[in-house]
Image 1: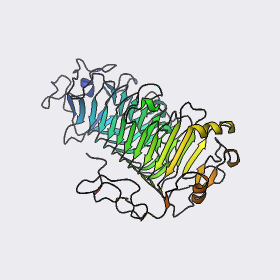
Image 2: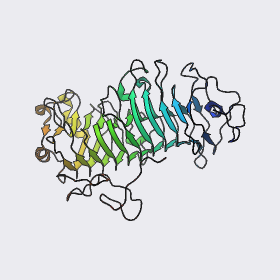
Image 3: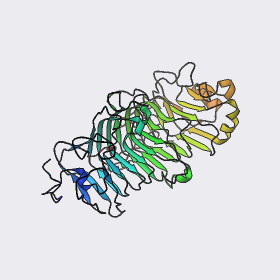
Image 4: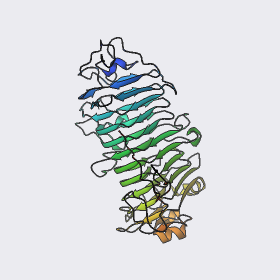
Length: 461
């Protein structure tokens, strides 16, 4: 607030606006903007809210945000971060707070807060990567944010990127707008984190979402109001996913519609904690390819289901593997007349597709720990949902655990027992003590479930 865009941009003589250092902004940025170079660090200072607009009035979605187009390098990324000790908050109140077209950008230790607008032309994605590689977001706090689902709004949104790394962040309270706060639309497009890649696009390689905490202060309310924590839209082929695919590890998600939404090929989801989730995974039939996906060593407490609605006549084999997970008290795991269960594996379309689906689709589940003290544990396999088949048509239905073991080749080495968690949600029971999330030891031994390490800090600031 004490700066001026006619200053020199040093600590003693700071600029006033973010637009002064955007290096490629559209619309009407300040005159003679500073051109960023590889290795530059931009510090955001102040003690009050800082809007991402260039002026007090947002004219349109095309001239109110800072666009970054200059590339950094691996050795010298371009960094934008809060100055140490500053309490500045960035209001993402219009068409993207930071719109990033350059490679090797690192956003670090920033705080974003949302603001509602009744204008249908305004939305509010705080950090947006478009066609970039090696973008990074770390140690930042995103809270009280409302988006417009028509624009694929998310707190962090990566469109057509490679090697995006979102880690050690805190996301609190996200939802779609009402009629008086942005366009209502369909809430499932409003997420904490969204990656969007199309199959055969050559993007989506080696993406990372790790050590984040996402927490809604109210329980999940359904896709009509909010989307899940991590939405991987459209899906990509395994051949496009790179060596590591998408790694989603050591995240904690509480009170959300879904942990992973739609997902994609080569998802490596391990060592996460989900609490009070409407869906652990929601993979719709039109989500795109979902090959070689592994969900392992996670702890799901008081959640609902793993929902995989199988697509019709896909061109590639698809596979999910679920193992070494702990599923504790899965709510509403059985609904009469509908295919609801812990797993909701359901082919989409007519009976003529059954043989095709069974030839090309593989779901494997084993070495998991199940315990439901409050409701019957059920599994749905080719069941009765409106988009799929009845038991007679598909040879499946709603199974008890014993029926699940005898009628499928799943969970032959799994257990139903009370895992008895310690303070870190590490199971202490006889058979499941090595299942669930494996904590990172910070000192001394550690490693696997029940190790001596004292856990991890998912959000650091």
